[in-house]
Structure formats: C-alpha cells, structure tokens
Image (cartoon, rainbow, N blue to C red; front, side):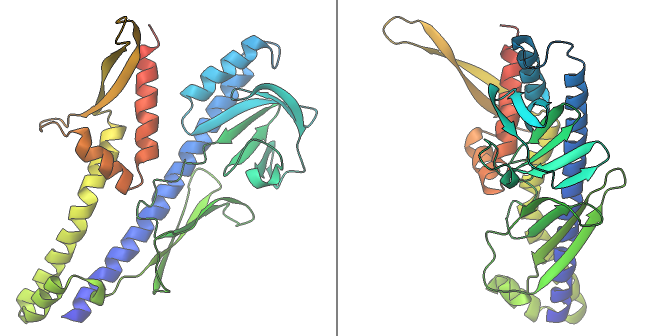
Length: 310
C-alpha cells in the first residue's frame, strides 16, 4: 500500500515539475512577444530620438507593455535615453553575451554601473528593452524548484531561479519543456516527496485500509490534499486572467478642508455565480503563493486605465 502511495506521489511531483517547465516557456513566449510589439511601436514613433515627445511615447509603450521594465534608445553602441530614466549620461554597452541575427542580449550583471538588476537587456536596431525582474517570480509559488530558462542549445541562459524552501538534499525529479515558436527551453528540478512526509493521520488511514479499498483511498486522499492546496491558487490565477477582480475607489480628503487629494484603490473579487471573496482572504493567498507581483501589476494597470480619462 505504501508503495502505491509513493508511486502516486512520484507521479504528482513529476507532473508538477512538468507544469512549472511548461509555464516557464509560456511566460518566455509572452515576454518575447511583448518585447517585439514594444520595439515595433517604438520604431513607429516618428519623432527625433530621445526628444521630449519621443521619451513620452516610450513611457506610454512601457506602461502598456506586459512584463517590460523599460524601453529606450541606443546610439553608437551606447544607451542614451529610456522611458524610465529619460535622457541620461550615455552608457557604453560591452560586447553582447549572446547574438541571434539582429538581436543582441546582455545580462544585467554584464552592465556594470547601469541601473538595471536581475533582468536582461535586449537590443534590436536602435531600440532596447529590459524585461521585468519579477516576470518569472510566480511560476513556482512554493519556491522549491530550480528553474533555468535557456536557449535550446543551452548557449545562453535567460533567467535562473533558485529554490528558497528546500531543506536537506532530497531525491529529485526533473522535467524540461521547449517552445515550438521561440528558441527557448525550460529545465526544472524539483524535490521528490516521500510517503514519510505525509501527515500521520493520512499514513494511518493508508496502512489500515484493505488491499482494494486502500488503493483507491490512498489515491483519493492524496489527490484531495494536493487539489485543496492548488485550487485556491489556480482560481486566483484565472481570476487575474479573466479580470474578475474589480476595483472600488475610496476618496481621500484632507480632514480640515475636505479637499480631495486622491483615491485609494480597493480590490474586490467577485467570481461569476459565487459570493464575493474579500481582500482579507485573497490578498494573503496571493502573498503565500507568490502571486503578489501579478496582483500588483493587475491592480496598477486597472487603476491607471480607469483613471486615465480623468
């Protein structure tokens, strides 16, 4: 019976690692598309590079571009301006770490003295983009897996995420997934759980169950325990994708003069056909599962979009 339970755990761990690898590739494809769209929009601005109008247009592109931290201009091998920093002291670029056609890539660590950390800078023509350092943070909420996102020939590593919650040196499961549309693969190494880690009550139930009934019960109990943890996380991820989280705006006024000084954006999650889930529940859930950056981006973008006409 324990062997069956261990087999189920292995399948679960393997499927989990494969899901993380697939999610990493999907996120990489989204980043690649966002970069190409942003660069194409920047090429159509039609204003003198790094002029005030050009920088304002770059700011708008950066704001509307998913997972882009900055976008700017290159002249004679130097960074001369960007949406985030405006016109700055020209920064000379070193030789690229990786090139593919007209595309050149650097790690932030290659750009000593630059304002970018924990990210990649990608240049094409006279335009560069910088991906968000938190773009991959929500892939493995438990932060127990090692994730490496690389080119298919493994000659360049786009991003590496190290586990923060691993204890000791457990057995490991590995998985990899490659994109069909981009030169990127994700390689994931996750800890392999063992039966002895299950709650004692669950172990007792498995051991005391009969042969045929025990097989089914072990599977259902373990799957139920896993699903119970994952369902809340998955529902929140889907809620962000489906824009189920709405914002209510609380006016902020000075007590003495009643002058309106701003608004506080309050999140409200109203799943279709279900009762409202208060922030006191889903905000801690987002923090626990590493979804806080995604929730922050969602709320900020929604608020800016709602308030832009005003």
